Amino acid sequence: MGREDAAPVAWAVSTDYVPYPAAVAAMEARAAAIADGTAGELIWLLEHPPLYTAGVSAKASDLIEPDRFPVFESGRGGQFTYHGPGQRVAYVMLDLTKRGRDVRAFVAALEAWIIDALAAFNVTGELRDGRVGVWVERKGAGWSREDKIAAIGVKLRKWVSFHGISLNVEPDLGHFSGIVPCGQTEHGVTSLVDLGLPVTMDEADAALRASFQRVFGPVEDASAPI
Figure 1 (cartoon, rainbow, N blue to C red):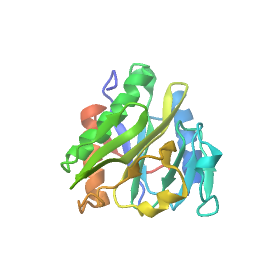
Figure 2 (figure 1 turned 180 degrees about the horizontal axis):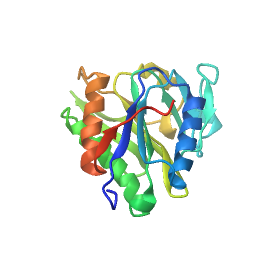
Figure 3 (figure 1 turned 180 degrees about the vertical axis):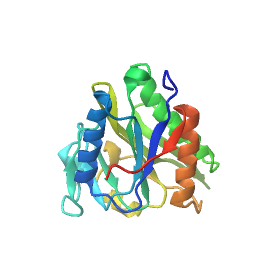
Figure 4 (figure 1 turned 90 degrees about the vertical axis):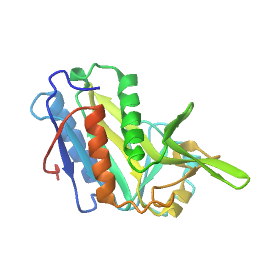
């Protein structure tokens, strides 16, 4: 899913928690600027304070504890999800006009990006038919289950993407109990630390950056939009 001209993508990391409404406003402004040719592509890594977001397919019944954290309507695909400290959110603002205008290939590339990054920690990320995101299979004595470790929810406008992915590095997994995550009642959620891997956010960022370059092409350091 590389660019036709192989131009580097701006890569920005916010060190402070970013409020969700401010992030969405900045992301939409950047996507519009990319579409009209006045700004370049951007990957923006950040953490949010604890909150729930409702994608375009969200069901009200899946919001179990509506007063637990702020709830925001989101234009991305998908259902309810949780964002908060310890979870790396990567907002993906790419110009698909220069990357083939193939939505299915774009989503597959996002999946490949996450799976390749997880492999840096010897974690096998897997896909499942009918379930969005990246999953890990867990087994013990007489039991097995599949837990979600990363979510994907994107939107396109004028062939420019925004919203993106989230990878659970070390969030409080108990915060997912206030929703039915992505409409899945039969499966749980996990994180790199929950899997017994003492991965820091900086280490996760390094893996995501290296993997992104293998899947999408080169990047260059940039300032966060806010």
